[in-house]
Length: 317
Image (cartoon, rainbow, N blue to C red; front, side, top):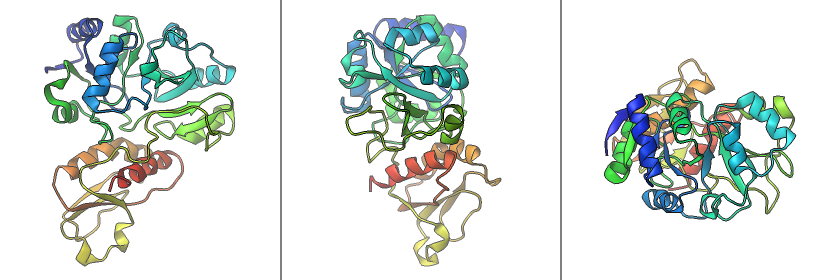
């Protein structure tokens, strides 16, 4: 399992591996993704196997351009066109009606497909090189912490993957926002694009999709979890006697008495905090402490996405 920088030679190697049914790890601006050719059901099945991911959880399809989108989406409504013009390439995933040619394994048997156009130059170089859409969930065991560095992937998946392209630390460090556009625009997963930005472009989003509506990755109650038990609680309210042997995840300021503390943004910036979230959780998880106390974040802007990840991580324990 080589780890290579995103040079033209490494990109060409990745493209060759993908064409031959390989599973390649790509850096994206959100988190690192484990990619396979969309049309290659055997390679896609291998992704599910490597991640131990249930096949009822659909994958996100990555495209290089609008021509790639047309390969997988049967219809692109006006509202989707507006969002594409505003946020692509970037960390926004749209759930659209799929073409019949998209394998059901990719979409968990649904008649919709989740699609995004990444902005990371290495991911885009691979997509342009192969000229085909790629299915690429996060490159980690299912339900575990998302990887924001190549080293996180190497530690979690080891020699199971064919190649890891190292693109440095992820810019956003948190997964894409997922929006369904039919029958009405609805937020399926908060993420790296703030809901307020999306609503400024197209108007209000439904926050609770209609029963039987579109499904999306990352919506299971338990997800994004470290091995260390995590709870969402204000560390300032935890008695000093209960802090020893535990870690604190803080927004702006450290807390006394904890064995370790990670501060996500001393400036109090939610974007900076979101970008540092999984990196901090990986670091705290590696310490082998008894517990992680994660400070609640405001449910606004990117705080909504941070709280979504923390609540799902806490549900694991």
